[in-house]
Length: 92
Image (cartoon, helix red, strand yellow):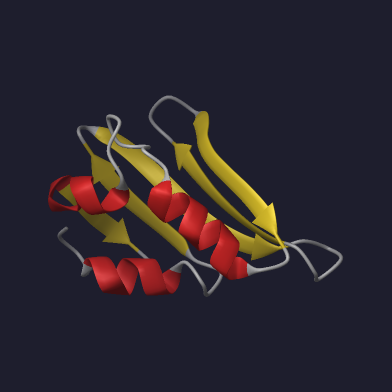
């Protein structure tokens, strides 16, 4: 991963992130936010290039959303850890 370390990237997912990165010529945006009720945390990953929602998790516990993201095979059937060497963080 260029632009930040994988541990910095994952840690940021707990803090209402808004990060943009490139993976295999596709631009992605990952964001986390608390809904209007201030109880539910949502973590979303969008492929901006294709305008598709790739991942979404909502839960009272941020840890559940981050763990689900970490375990999901979102990058050519690989996890973020398996694909991290090919990710270039643009901002966030």
